[in-house]
Image 1 (cartoon, rainbow, N blue to C red):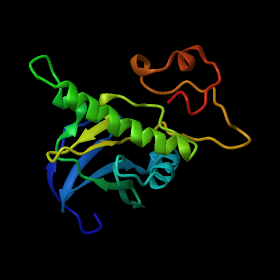
Image 2 (cartoon, helix red, strand yellow; image 1 turned 90 degrees about the vertical axis):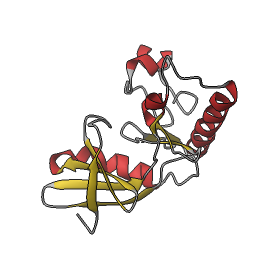
Image 3 (cartoon, rainbow, N blue to C red; image 1 turned 45 degrees about the horizontal axis):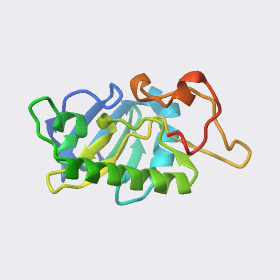
Length: 174
């Protein structure tokens, strides 16, 4: 795998695709080559979203059988795994997470890009307190010709009402 050595398999997740942990400290998303058409948009938009509050895409490559996306490793995993009934999450921490996510979204919207699947599973944290948006599988780029969208994608419980109703939306709905 291009010089990466697998030392730990993470639980299957990340849109039901395998995510593997490699050394040195990168996350690798490995998908079958048949997924390449869907992944092309994800890789392209993610590559154009370089921001301190967005997980860094390091490289992507294709083998005869797989598509490999190499990303920055976030040691704490997703926000969902950090929360729970028995977890005390102070308001100051909640405010910080919200601030980081909003900074990432503001950057994307200035660039006319929409994430369209913001949820705690797609917000990653590390053990030093960094918070970053990940997973660009549903992301799109708006254009002058198509400044609004009507497609319904994302996770239903996290969708804006405009998406569920099939109404036109722009950067105000993400």
